[in-house]
Structure formats: structure tokens, C-alpha cells
Length: 338
Ligand code: TRP
Image 1 (cartoon, rainbow, N blue to C red):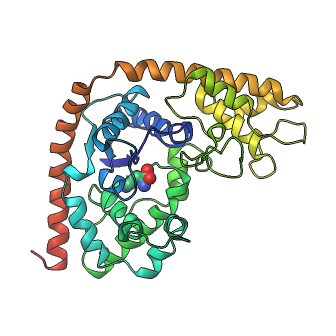
Image 2: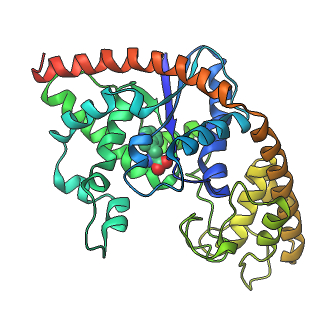
Image 3: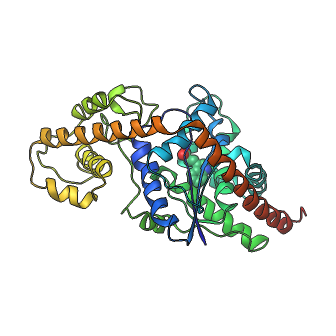
């Protein structure tokens, strides 16, 4: 059986960008593959990654809410789907240490996320630097071939592949090397990674850390408020609706949001709007799709109980510890620790 694995850091309420770009595609993928009987689906809360930076409010509540997001997004649970918390499987930290001995300072320092987060700061914790190595451990422990995540994390997948290959060559063929990001993208069924843009500055990714409220839509925004934010999104003065992220990032972002909130393929949405010159019409449509989606999502979220989540975590963590500990033992033997 092949393994599909993903996680999303739960440091706050997520943005519509996190949801449409990472969480929802993952749920659609999981539902498609878990039923085939040929794939294991692992979804985990990277809580050790969460404590690297500030957490909004209580971490436990954030974890619980993030697991609920998956369920509210429609994740179907069956025997091939497991949900767990990273810190409940101690093999993650242990493998991270061993991989630290294989990774080089140079390759880790090249990671864009590290560069962005450390630049211009007087001090920066070591974990920001080590972040992708722990991520590699998260993936390699479960022999995951597919790791559907947002485009900003692709570099970390390539690093994981390099570490796994190097380890296999240096010690023993222990790790399954995840597939290349170009193939990950094909597997996800998108032409490229999905990156929902900032509504006011569509050259940038939508991010919860952006100050301007109208730049981002949060999953707990009132639907009417979210609709207003779409109406005030930055577009351009070209006067034609066309999907071209480079020349028309604002319009392209709206088309992308429309496709993902309605579940209609992007190519169809784009074709339906081709030739339209009035951006107001498009905005109205997208605003109403986003409001409808949020209304639905928020209703379903309220229906998921804490007890339901804890039950899933208990099963998931038992399973995860078994798989991860077996792989860790292989690794420890390969390097001579056992
Ligand atoms: N870095 C991911 C994020 O920011 C979370 C994550 C940690 C992850 N480890 C992972 C995702 C392993 C996929 C696989 O959301």
C-alpha cells in the first residue's frame, strides 16, 4: 500500500487560503484514494512545529479545531485514514535528530521559508532552521510517497528526497523516497501548486500574519464580511477576465477561489468567464460562492464534537506509533545505534 501524508500547522484560525490551497484539496484526495484500498492516508497535527513560533491562544484548542476542520471539510473516515498528533509519536523527534546528522547546514540554510523567517531578526530560534528536517522525519517514518501540501512547502519535499536518498546510500536502503514535486502536483490533479493570493496585494500569498483585514479571509469570518472582502479585492485595469497569474494575479486569484469553493474545475470556470469585461460581475459571483461555502463549512464545524475528535486521535496514535517505531528501529540499526 502507498501512503499519502499531510499536516497543517495549527497556530491559529486558518485562512481561506490555507483551506482552499491545502486542506480542501487534501480532503478531496483522501476521499478519492482511501476507498480504493491501495492507499493509507495519514493526517497529522504538527504540534512540535507549532511551538516553533507563537501560538494564538491555547495550543490544545488549536489542535482540536484543526482536526475538526478536516472533518468539517468532508473527510471520510475509514480503516485506511488515520489522524494523529506529532508530539504523541516520539519517533518524530528521534528521527529528526538522526537526520540532523545527515543534513548539511548549506542545504538547510537555502530554504526560502527559513531565509524569510530569519532575515532581519536579531535572534531566531534553532528550530526555525531545523523545521524542514523534522518535516522530513514526519514523512519518512511512514514511507509516504505522496505529500499533498501548499506550494510554499515544495522545497521541503525536495530536501526530504535528498536526505532520504543520501541516507539510503550511506547506510542502508531504509527509506521510501517521496515522489518529485512535479509528480506530486500531477497526483493532486492540479497543474501546479495552489496558492491563494492576498486580496489586496495579489502578488503575495494570502497570509494570516498580514495586518490589513481586507487582505485575507479567515475561516471564522462572518460570510457577509467575507463577501465584502471579495468585493474590495484588487484587480487590474486590463478589462478582460483571463486566467494569467503573472499578468492578472488579482483576477486569476478570484477565478481560482471560484473554482475551489464551488468544486468546478478551474478550466471550466475560466472558460465560462472568458470574454467578460466587467470585473464587478465576477466579483459578485465569487463573493456569493465564498459566503455560501463559509456558511456551510461553519455549520458543519459546529456539529463536530470534541469526543469524536479524541476518539479518532486515540485510534490514529496507536497506529502511528506502531508504524513509526518500526521504521525508527530500522534506522537505528542502519546507523549502528541498535
Ligand atoms: N509545514 C507544514 C505547514 O506549515 C506542516 C508540516 C509539518 C507538514 N510536517 C509536515 C506537512 C510533513 C506535510 C508533511 O503547514
